Length: 559
Image (cartoon, rainbow, N blue to C red; front, side):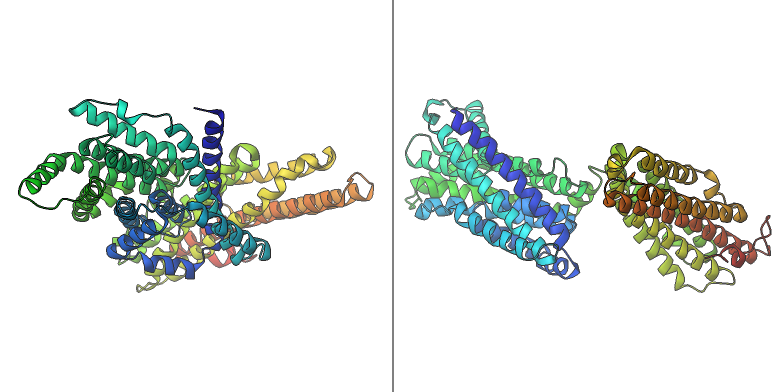
């Protein structure tokens, strides 16, 4: 392998990964409800998903590109697992069009013809509409183009390597001979990131008489398996659903390869019989194209029957800690018809949600560099679990609620709003904590002291106590407000003395202190509202007040 080929492979892989990243990030920003609805409508049935995957692959002559596109949509939350797998299955059948095109007209699509205009158009959109949906779409389009360009560079670099490979030197018969060419097809596809490249090599070798039909068929089978490597690379740091899509791609292609080995003897026996009876046989390359299409279509027929079970099985694989946390543990739908019990379940789930948010936030505030990614994953957990709580509360509100239950439900919904506010402020505070290192030590220490007080509050178990002392909560709120005013005055005094070299540091310090104050406020009001919900249930049971004498209305008097 020459240095030029090696650097080309490295650069092509880098372009491929950069394109994938740009595509996913652009889709995350650009994907609004309307775009998601359109994309889902294109793949909302098996037939539509298959047609979309087949047509896109036949158009761009790269199942890898379509596979990564589907994974990108799933990674961005635009497509569901159930929709994406049918695009993948359609793509697997669509990749057989390469064989038909090469064998029929010897035509190959120049990927650069698609890549360079996509990069140009995408960047024009990105530069003319920064921060807007159109700009994000341009970023995604540019990502598509860079991805295609990476594939092109990989293929060009591979040509230099393939020139020194003498396929005809691999000779022999039987299982191990075929296995060697399966591995050859797999290796070429994995290196070139395109099954089209290895299929074209196999077809050319068979047409030139360098290898036999069975050997060429083995290379095609290897190429079919090798194309799954692209999907595996694309999901190394992707979401669990994206990994499941890549797994469905591997399962389908591996299943098709097994079917290919099973039908290969029958296929060539049928060819011999047709030849003996005087049928006009297609050329060697066309015969391989037919074989490639046949075993992929048979694979599709098999998964058509078992697809629902396969998708269900995949949902249980690659389960992340965040997915486990995001699953409601107390929301039993069978209890909706028994509102009193359902409210209790809702309260337990709300307490769990509060712990997830407050514990995640306090861990980040204590060690920002270590827990920033953990906090961002907790945000995803919160959004999923909060949606489940809202849905459960909506279903419960449609039931006939007896005295006390409507008040308890209203307090719990306000509790959820405070939880959502904490998450919102934590998202904002992440951009300010990193600037602390540039602040003068005297100001930094004062902000850190205020943050440590908040960490202690967020870790205080009394917040989660059903019988928390509301007066204690109100005192905490007043102390944090007084501490904030004192911290603000301290920062302003430092600025007036010239201790802050740049006014930007003044703004950062003030903004961070204000965000910490807001988090403390919402954490305290979360506990107050949760206590009020418990008091409302106690009133329903005949207890006019709690042990500290504070009823639900009194508990929220300061909000």
